Image 1 (tube, helix red, strand yellow):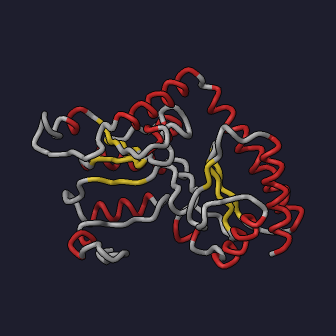
Image 2 (cartoon, rainbow, N blue to C red):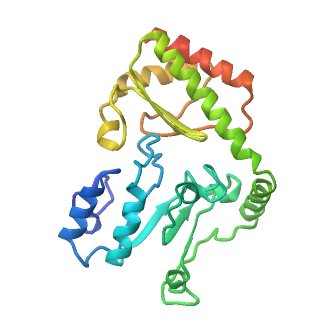
Length: 267
């Protein structure tokens, strides 16, 4: 706490940021109690993707919502990864927990560069021209990104079966991976939800970043290169969730699973 974790982040900025482990509601309560009346917002990925795919424990998001309501703290969900991916309303719809603000990325631009945020009117009314908070950007409302995003969102709205298909694809792949791990006697952990999943190179249950850090990242590097040699391009970090596409067919899944078995055998 209070220490920059990257060059360019000032000590002043870091000092104004408090950290609590994901899925540890009691720790969040401790931090809030120790800084009563001083916390403006709690921001998190409702389903984490930036430490690998980590799901919220039952009651965690609901507990955060309760704390924020009681302490007048703004609850912000970073749905850059989960927005329109896990459901039409993102993780918040799936988990039935509504934040005060939501951030999104290029998902709403059909893959084109774009970012957006939105939320409750009493907060958004502070943004110009209605309020005093100035916000603008060179590419804000870029017509190409907006056209691509609108087309994608219309398609999702008219084809809700996309989410059923993605979940089926995710289950097929993850179940196949689990069978391979069992067959090879490997105790690794897989977390998944819908079209998001991560194979963690640890035998520990992964429910926060500290758990994810028990992974053998050197072994993951060998796994990544082995999969790449077989034509499967994964995210190059143990701490990134993988995402599945509607373009994947059974022949692709068979290829991915075959590459996994060959690569895992060779480690």
